[in-house]
Image (cartoon, rainbow, N blue to C red; front, side, top):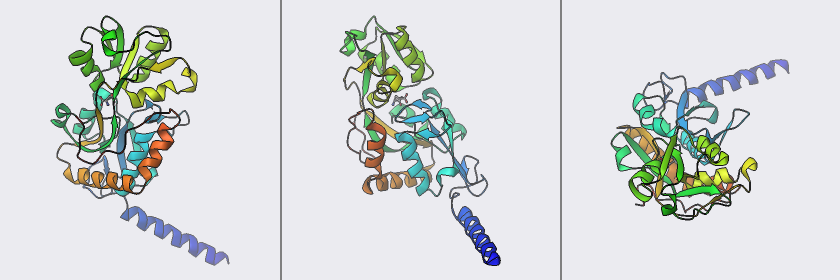
Amino acid sequence: MKLRKVSAAAATALVLALTATACGGDDGGDSNGSGSGGGNKIKIGIKYDQPGLGLKEPDGSFSGFDVDVATYVAKELGYKPDQIEWVETKSADRENALSRGDVKMIAATYSITDERKQKVDFAGPYLLAHQDLLVKKDSDITKATDLNEKKLCSVAGSTSAQNVKDDFAPKAQLTQRGGYSECLSALQSGAVDALTTDDSILAGYAAQDQYKGQFKLAGLKLSNENYGIGVKKGDTATLNKINTALEKMVSDGSWEKAVKENFGPANYKNEPAPKIGQIVQ
Ligand code: GLU
């Protein structure tokens, strides 16, 4: 009996070893995600402070739609969840993190834009969001032009900050912070009058227990934000695999499930799954 147990354990160990060899590496030997030289890990960039999208929980685990999408994609690339190393990639750091090879891919509310496409490549899109405003419950800001002369917070390196300057509120007093949670604190303390970014992100903040009833979304669709998964420029092999994985995620129902689980609590009404390669301008 004892002997049989040992041999069963040995067989399990062997299977595990074989699985570990078979899984993981499929794309060269760089240190950000391959089996052949990188220790069977894949480094993926996400946000750490966006509930419902990319959040580092107090217990050190990660949650959100971007996390679920990236986990699914990683699985299709041959990496189990425990082979993923999550890396925080703030808005302004994303292109550099990919160019330097710090991470293999980025799923971090990362809008596909022509400017960014000069530096990185994008798989997807996998979600369509829209820029909106988050204001205090009693605020009289209801439209973008109300922002002129008002104090507005957004994040450096985001399309949200750029759109304000270029487009809908050039006279707003724009403060740019490193992350959206910093803007949220500024909004709560009254240091700014509004926070602007994607409605998907804002809905997550408004629904947080500690903020419930304090804020409202203006409900404006100020832009189309097509979320893509960023990869290093020229990494077509990974890009094609990610696109195949994203298509599968939609067709097998996992995309819809992830949407419900992550956006349901914030009551965020998401757009239907986008088609790969189709950008809504
Ligand atoms: N989706 C927009 C962007 O890529 C805003 C959100 C963000 O900063 O991640 O810039």
